[in-house]
Length: 123
Image 1 (spheres, rainbow, N blue to C red):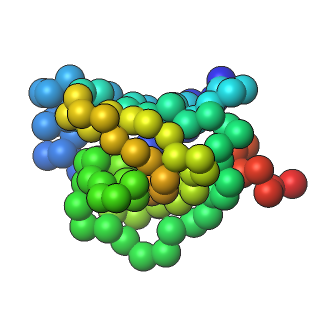
Image 2 (cartoon, rainbow, N blue to C red):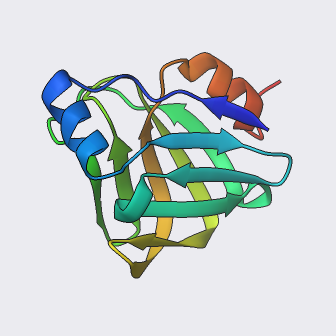
């Protein structure tokens, strides 16, 4: 299992996450990609369902967990994003409710290491 750090959020967001008990984590195990944003969002994606891992161009203004129609942004900062394409879709939870995850944009500190470990088309 490898823990991939999400970038440290700005102090105000960091304090809010800590106050609400959220400890963002992204782990890659032998069998799955596990993303956990505490009570706000979680998903376990089987590695066999990861079809691509690519850098996400540009920056995002919002921070947290946001999704619509299977596309989810889970980030602690606006930069350093990667997109994980999932097929078949995985089931996750947002605010306790079931959600479908087809695409997952994540803020990852070391995108190259994350891609090298997870991307089925890499190396």
